[in-house]
Length: 182
Image (cartoon, rainbow, N blue to C red; front, side, top):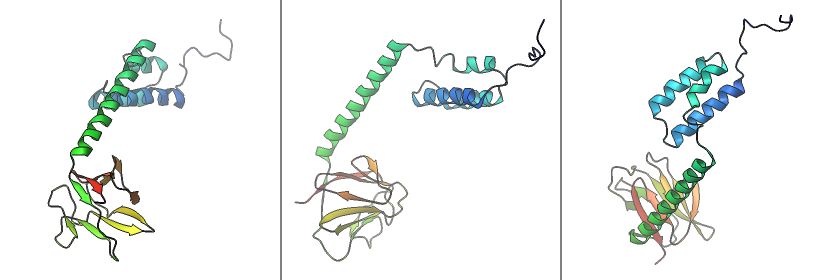
């Protein structure tokens, strides 16, 4: 006999924390390449529509099955992949054309596809007014001018301004250079 406080007719309601945990596991599965985008979307819809914990378990069963050994292998492969990426970037940096830093002047060096720029780069991934390089307080500063394909310095996207130095790897769209003072 059940007490008056127990209700066997109604299953326990899912908490937001349980749904969030499942959605987090699904996002991680996509990030690791273990789920396709379509599978992720389908499982996300099922997780949001689930009414009980028994409906959530099958959605992540294949993603949570990895043990300590598997996590170690995935971590090692990730570190090896990151190392090979850094190595190829370092190898590429030595082979890039030099971009000579201009002599300091009153006006910044504008970079882009437009012929009025001080440095014209005729490539489809470079915006008309892409970036500008100027000398401020004895330092070189690179500023992105709202370019479509972005500007990066040493692999990091420039969102406003960044200080650059001799030897830095600078990319405008998909055109890459190594800054040089001589």
